[in-house]
Amino acid sequence: MANEPRIKGVSLYNHLEFVTKTFGEPGTAAVLARVPPRSVEAIKASVAFEWYPLQAIADLDQAIVETHYGGDASQSWRMGAYSFEKHVTTIYRVLMHTLQTGFVLKKAGALAARVVEGSTIVISQDGPGSALIKMGGYDSPSPVFCHLVRGCMMGVLFGCGHQDATVDHVRCDPSPRGACEYRARWR
Image (cartoon, rainbow, N blue to C red):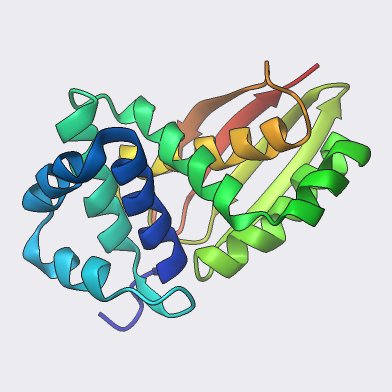
């Protein structure tokens, strides 16, 4: 499909690595056995800086959630936080602790656009320790993916030193190229 949203291969690699580190090789094999064949090819052939169908990571994450989290889509935030942590180099981690959290959140939009092709992110800090985040520009492939994005935002806040931070998935706009809304809170 020509207009199908795409994601960088590094995300596929990071999610497989998360499964292997968390559940071991047998856990990874169990996940891959649940992934539809159309996505297994992309996952196994992924190269970090190549683009792959967004559906491949949605299928992978759905299989992870079904295999290891009893189908609870909200648990996919764990893959998002892990993936964010892997994307951010040491120098950025040091800087994140010294910069204002609202500023760092806004800069996260640039990273999102580099990982999910065509994505947009609008972050409005609406008070001390609070922001509304709207991410869209693509058709969200599943509720699992919505929570994956939530995890990425939590990773940003954790990276800023806010281990008690929360990000709630407020709502999804199901229209084509709609946006998911998230509420971030930190102290």
